[in-house]
Length: 96
Image (cartoon, rainbow, N blue to C red; front, side, top):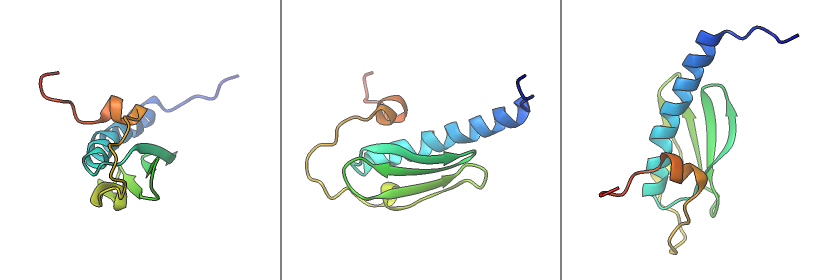
């Protein structure tokens, strides 16, 4: 038997996570990082860069986003590859 899920709470949590993605991913791409999700628990998530040790933290419930991933440029000089997160949630090129 399946446990009953509070769909309203799940909807709110999902909306908060999507808001996090809309903020963290474009900011990390602007800093030339290759963003990926390291861990997620409800409205909170830790993000990382696939090519440097930068991390970012976001709490959708508190509206908190910070860390080197969204505040500091990636130290690699080469052009970053487009991760799945960057493709789905990153900034759109003009003319697209």
